Length: 256
Image (cartoon, rainbow, N blue to C red; front, side, top):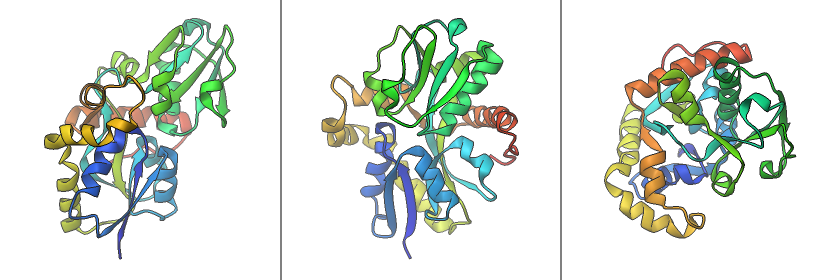
């Protein structure tokens, strides 16, 4: 039976897709492309065996296994996860939330409470978040490829703000299994993903027609996105999940 793998359909994750599609695993996996929240929902519903999921979803999983030392992370400016505002932070009264990734929503709430020291009204926005109601006191959390075209008087990159607050890099998503997977397969899975390291030029050439106008893919994938799940990124994950657990009233993840 094929191993069901759900990966994120955003530009930041396409290097993983290229590596899997060009690996010797391709005949043994069923690969689907989903928005981040759907990746998590599939894993929770056992509709996938491995998913590239927003890390906050770990708090909801009764059983989970981080199966790769690669992730979607950022050391500083991630560029495609930000709070877009019509006003400085201190004047924000309403924040509209992009519900495609609950990690970004939780991160914004953590920063608001512990770093920015603001208490806005939170509004889930189910439509096109880029068309959120703009006013002198509104802002919106916007993630993914649509963020490339966003323009606002004030832009607060969430990875940069997290670094200022915690001194640590941030992990937005990591590869998680909802059950034990054969170790031999996991080794091959990681070998396939690690092709990012030596094949970035080929990956850029393959996807260049899919990039938004004016976006340098090599620059984005090597300067804004940081793929290795390093020790300091794991520390950042632990700290984030501690705060996220407190906000959501969920248990803390204990083994990262």
